[in-house]
Length: 133
Image 1 (tube, rainbow, N blue to C red):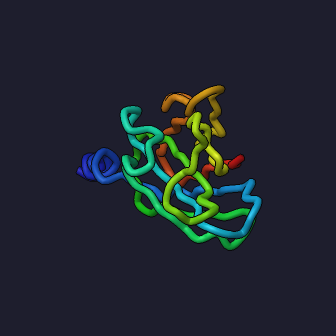
Image 2: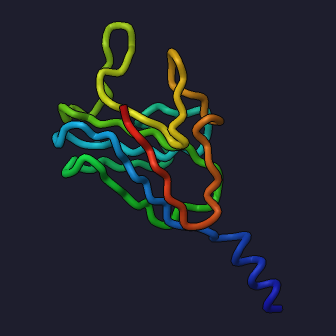
């Protein structure tokens, strides 16, 4: 009976905290947007994330912890909204003008990386380091 209860506890309701450590912040102004994506269809479109947070920049390195995230596969996208207008500013060609980054520090040449390049498994308390540029 105890084994069954332990198995059910692991199968249902398993969650952990996810800490996001952001480095590469050059100016202490504006906000940092952190988005957690749970599928490739919405990645990395801010506003379509599964869960997200905006925090005021107070340091050149920052951390934020999402509590009780269900165990699953995720990808993160982060950007420094230097002018605090709520969007990732881009030039006429669609190239970002503000620093950004992804989990696993994934990068693509001419667009955002695919979900698969930034994905990670959350199975226990986890910490992700993201360098924005």
